[in-house]
Each structure stands twice: as C-alpha cells, then as structure tokens.
Length: 172
Image (cartoon, rainbow, N blue to C red; front, side):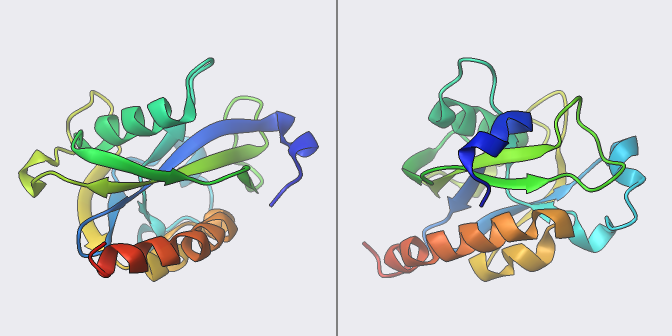
C-alpha cells in the first residue's frame, strides 16, 4: 500500500466486492477496451474479469459512489453495505496507459451482500456498458483474473475480505 502523501496523483476510485448468500463474489467481464488499454500488451482476454469499480466524483461519499457504481455497472440496487476498507489501496498505471494526468488509482473497497434476485442483474442498465458477461466466483480467484498491474490491490482485498466471506458462509 502507498503512503497517503504519495496519493495526490492517484485517481480516487471505489470498488465493490459483492457477495451472494453462498459467499461467492460477483465478477464482470469487461466489455470494451479503450485504446490506451488495448495498447497495453499485458492486457488479454483472460484478464478481463473484475469486480465493479469506478471513479469517485468530487464531494461524493465513498459509500454513495460504491452504490452508484454497482447500479451503473450491474443494475443491482438490492445490496446491503457490510464494510469499507480503511485507508487506501493503490496501484500505478503501466507505461503507456493514461487516464488524464493520473499516474494510478487509489481505491477504497466496499463489501456488500446481494439481497435481490439474479433477475435484477442488468449489464445494460447504464448508457456506458462496462461488462458483457458476469458470474459468481470464489474470492481467491480475484488476483488471477485481474490485469497484472492491479493484482497487488486484489491480493490485499482478498486477504481482508476472506474472514467476512467465511462469516457469510457460516450463515451469520
């Protein structure tokens, strides 16, 4: 994790680890690659699975951003907030990958419990479709599914949320 004083050039971002009642997490398959991402030779189809995530608007609360991103990317509104990671998890963008003047992203992650019916999931809920497919998977899969430059964040996230996942599986 990067120290806070180094985070000024990192885009504020929020991610959502959405658990179902079986303790599995939602993974979306990225639909469109931007030209900057397509130019990145480390990005292949096998690394196009990720959890919902996106930018935090100026003045927006982290939890509000998490619910907004979840709805925009999945159509899901039937979710309950369980916790948010303390501090920031951060990663640098690889060479040749730019988002405005940011050198990377700093993220807070929200763990949520899906309380709806899968019929609620609508990947075309927003006018900018992020995902073209989705599935439930094991939390431990996360680091191997994501692009290499985000793996450290997903590894930290996985370690932080395994006890919560086990709690969900215990039926609590």
